[in-house]
Image (tube, rainbow, N blue to C red; front, side, top):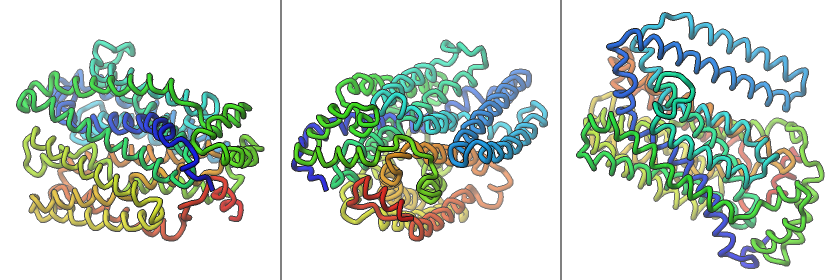
Length: 536
């Protein structure tokens, strides 16, 4: 096992911190929408109720956009299925998926182009969650990008996409090179940013895992999750400051304030792009690319001269087959990766993070107060993520995941009950903070640690399946929450509490899944974990 003391601590920490900026932008880009939900609805969607002709154009373009998204997801799914099952069997399964998608598209277009409550809620949900469409695409191509461009250049591409998205989302009318309605232009730029998020969500933890010595790998990969949460907290402060600068003036926020929220992302995006020029490529990619001397130099710096030769030999051994079939180790490793990703989202975390101001407004808070309460949520998230970083290499991955899932389930059942009983107040806030705390100490950082560890080197690209599945699950949760939360029939019975009970059930299922199927990876090198899957 490599000893950290033999390497250059400062160097290892410095390149880790640069890589975690990808996580910071991940958090910043996905959470910036939280402060703008109401403003976007007022700017883009509410006026459609008074202009049926404009509404019809927007709905048509929205449905076309959804059809394109479905087609892209089907294509990506087909490519993955071919890699998993071979050309013939994979194509047959992909054909069934395509048929189901075609039926979904037909159902989408069969309704009239009128703005019903259901259509307005769906359009709002898609506008808010549109970045997740890009995340699915970015996650799907992450394996390809990591192999063809490398981990470092893949992160450079992500930084450029972040910058373009920030500018385009802030001024979608002026950057409307797509010749569509402004709301659709906004959605497209959010999707572009989402591709950057999808790439960074895979490449940042992969980069850190491949650079870090095994004894502290869990801790260093967890710093990526800390950066994600820190990025969210930063943008919560930014959103609050922008709203507070005009005393929470709803009219100004609806016309201009939301633009400054999105534009603010250009600063960390450009910083990330510049700093990436000063970090090395990972040793494992360098060996794959036939650049072993460069790999040896990087290993000497991060692990020390004595350990470098041993690690290099291990890497060379596991990379004898540069790109093995994804089912070379059986289907369990891929299934575990996918389900870890799905459960991380199905417990409902991004509903809390994206819609927190909306939830607080349902509790009766004004916009600026709701944004301040969101800062409190972000602070708790950050604090307990630090706790996870300090314990993930001490207590192990499985105990944290199981305890966290059960704690989230209790909190979500409690939050749903406060809404159901219409006793929303301090109790609801405490349940929300409890939920965020349990997520931050478990499924937030630890899921990424496990995903960066469990995939053997020769099928590391298969991690893209898990990442893509995570973003599909995120899209489903974020898109459907407004449909449940703003549904008149459900609210007449559950008073906004229905969705939270669904997420509570998911927490219980997540705990059972980890207990039964997820292996413990604490203290094992990537090569030792690979041998574990070989035994399966």
